[in-house]
Length: 411
Image 1 (cartoon, one colour):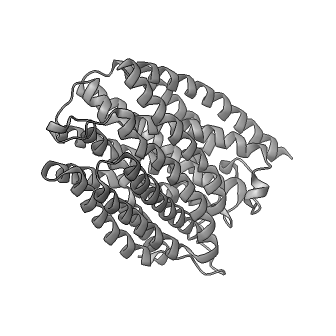
Image 2 (tube, helix red, strand yellow; image 1 turned 90 degrees about the vertical axis):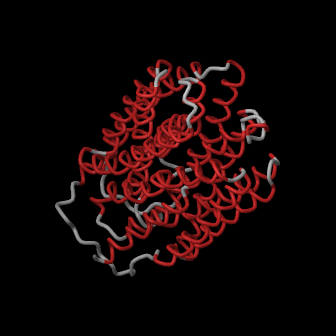
């Protein structure tokens, strides 16, 4: 195995160890059960608040971590991130059924740590490979993060089946702390004179722009395409987070699925499709271009949201969850490569950190909105309708983005 592939494997494996955010569905569902059934008797909004805060802090962690890894190197930042993830969960278990304590320990400490780790391994892996492979490399690294749900969700479910909520959080934190800090030691950037091998002829047209100069974040935010990219990313991840953050509750209340093992299988299956979306979306975008791939993803998600209210059986719900997972994953693999296409690889950690603030904004709005809708109307129907409308807006903004990139090519 070559050095570049080993680093890619290490970066992907590291993300596998910190993807604890995807386990919150199971904790949230358990927290909303009555006390005599092993829960905390919390409302959906109470149980969703740590996740909402976590999404925001995750994006802040990416923003800060991206800048730090550009200055002090990815290994130190990834190690610090792994420590924060594990320590936050352990502390959350210690504070118990305290809303503020859980929000601070899991939502702030753990999720800032996730952001540190995520932002350190993604730009690092991209630097080891040729520009024509940015999409597929981005897909594998980000895919490791979502694929964590395949083993962490069943692990969390098993813990919750045998232990209390507090003990389950502590055990999950210990596992994450040990594995993440170990793998972080293998994350490193290439030498300054390193030149990645060109596996095939570089298709400049696919990037939808001329080969970019390395823009700083300040220069990037003065371009029109940055804001168009930000809006498209914001809408895509908002819908994905809405489904991912509530799919267990949707299955429980909308489809009447009460078996925890089935719910865990649903989440794991969604994570696998999330991974397929990241790898597949990255690969396809390398071939047909980022805006073209985004158009396909947006239309798929729009149709899915229009149909989601009718998913009242297990097979239908599985279909909706898998499509949502695939589209969400595709968007999250396209945009790191898209950012490097448009603004250069040198400052990609910092630049993608700015783009990724859209993830935090969506994480603040989407989960709170959905929890409010359900607590008020006892149904998710209105949320699905709003999501479908948002995807229509995304189609229009994506079209404007593509026209902007064509204009840049002509100048």
